[in-house]
Image (tube, rainbow, N blue to C red):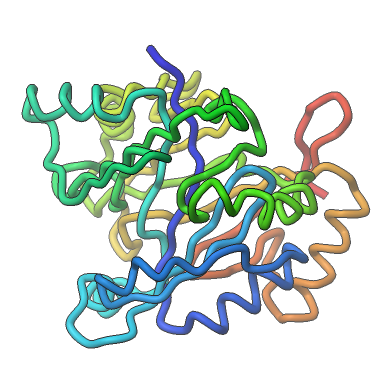
Length: 283
């Protein structure tokens, strides 16, 4: 199968400024972009980078938006998983020809093709988006280049403006996501198989696991009464013990620390120390 990279996670929140402060402070970074185009859905947003990965946070700024209704139902939390592949249009044709999912929004530009799919019927309680970032003379291999241009940060002419932020956080990378199934649904193997069939993602070694080409894993968790469906945990790799200790110190000063984890934008975050040998460990 063609490689698929997990490039971005989108979250929703009632309080955009509060979550902006948490994320930029904990990761010691800055907002790299606020997309004016999301105003068409009654939203404001911002993006920050973790090396070549991106976190987006959105909040409604007018009544009766789909994001606002979801916030009222579930509270702050994960909203979308945005993936990158070589040919999103070809994958869309496969999905629609086989009646596997419904496209709810798509757009194309000189930079990229972007396709969002309706989450109804797709296990995991989160909206999937599969995009293609087109190669260019300056970015000939955007799928496999760690710090490559990404269309969500604006046109390619902005790359020089946010490259320093990617370099500043290059010791960070998304490592693993945990998606909780709806209460009563324990079929984690079926959930992983569905995402694999839909989007061409490789299966992981463990049951109910997906393995993206960039090394990120997605784990599906059995649904449980009293636990909401959707994104439950994000794990982040951190290279350098000093970097990790500084991050935990900043999180502690903000009062965010739990028992080996912190909480931001409605989900649990776990930081793993990555050694020179590539092995991960908890402090």
